[in-house]
Length: 434
Image (cartoon, rainbow, N blue to C red; front, side, top):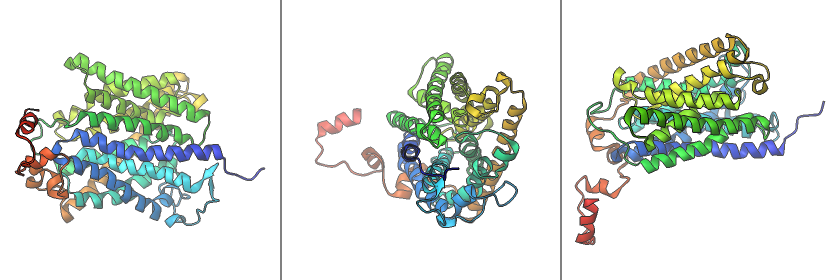
């Protein structure tokens, strides 16, 4: 048998895919930043960007080893053999690509998963508490679940046999369940269900959604870990599901509200992309179209549940990522085809109900684990240093009170700063009318 060797085509594709996934976090920052009010937009951007630095340090120190190292305990966690990336030189291979590249690719997944949670607690979380939460959460929630799903000997992949191609369980469901937990720890924003809390910049939201969609091709097709037919199928499935998710959401808006909105288009596309993440490498093109459509329709209703159930999920992390992740993971049990999976088939393709049961058990366990551990972490941080910003900070805005900055000049003017004398009176008048 020939010795393993690096495949330059696979490596080149994974290098590009890694860069695409990393771009998703700045894209998420813009997506979330446009959805909040002007007084906290910079804080929202910062919560995503600082996650890049925090998760990277944790991942390199021990996160990668615990997630992808040889199983150390009953399929629950890896060992510490590769802490500090020990033993992973440039000649070390993971399949046909350098192990260091595979580790970096997986790092970008961990980064955006942590950043996703910030949307659930937008406008009211202490930045210092977020700095503590992210590395602790990454180690106690993301790393173990990743080992269960993708690590060698992980119980979900090796023992249960549930399928997850690109992250429905470790990314979408953990972020959504964790966002719900933090919503309950922090409580609702001031004025929740009373004040209008509309997105302040919809073009920014659309730009962020576009960058997310662009990066998602690296997220999903990159998970094939090679420049091959599976990557091509996952790429096309990703595009298709994003499109039907967008159309499904707009259909609901038009029928329910009489107006298809830009925010709905962006949210629908993201919902479809969320749902196809676990299933892009397991379903046919027809299955991908159905997965995206189902997510667009269901998530468009799910985002309103917070008003009925009284949890303040600021930017709909629960309604889109938790619900969308559940939809995509469960529908594998219906639409999986052996041409994609290499063997397992869904109920609608003659595979019986067994695969659906496996998918359901994985969803329930991961969601409950992420919720319970995150709730515990949030409560401990809240007791130790306080997790929620003060009423004064929340009312004034976290940009000024935490970062001493504002995103827009009129934000400064709104807090009592004098108008510059060099601005002509006519210009001031036009600006005021605008």
